[in-house]
Image (cartoon, rainbow, N blue to C red; front, side, top):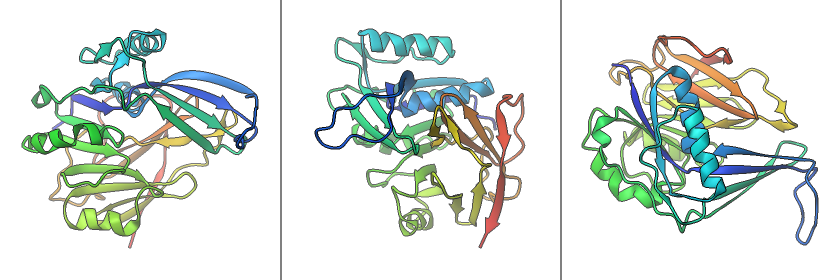
Length: 289
């Protein structure tokens, strides 16, 4: 079974990125060497990568305003052919994410506006075959997650870990800074999560399941505009994962790089069908014991 209709659910915001020599100390007044604005939030970041596969991808999440920043996001989604018909657009202020990047690539992030936002629900979720969640949205939709578990044909993945996971996930992508190895193993052993991808900015990623673990080593990836490329936590199953078989039998792993400084890992259990975007770079996966 191929996943053809995918819902990316989570944060929707413009990223306001400032490049500085160092993060300011208390009371400092500094100037950035450069700055840029880009459409961001996990839902948009993931949808941008998925649409490269010519898949039908939709976004939902927090509401956005009718202000210039909200219009900027809507125009961006239109330009990328990402379906956004269900977005809540109201008279409020569009949430933002300010990102300060120092000369070593270290990022300091300040998000604002989410607590005052209303959020989409999971209406018509049965029309989708894959759901991508982010950790920021969980506190607003957690009660609904229990209900969607009844849809046995829905592949559910989540990026990030902040709130207790007491609902079923097919895939969890999480930083090693957010969860301990023991916590990850407990989620797998209890069959709460089938697969967990542990990522790190400077160490090999590790994919764990009841079948064991593999380490994923990307090529040397350095900087764009002076900042280290960080992994966007994206996992998309192009083909259905057969949980009765080993996840390592025919694993295909791809690392994609897109400016300005965005990156993503896509893992599928078998050969990917269809055209592969030109900017994809192969990486190595090694089974570990």
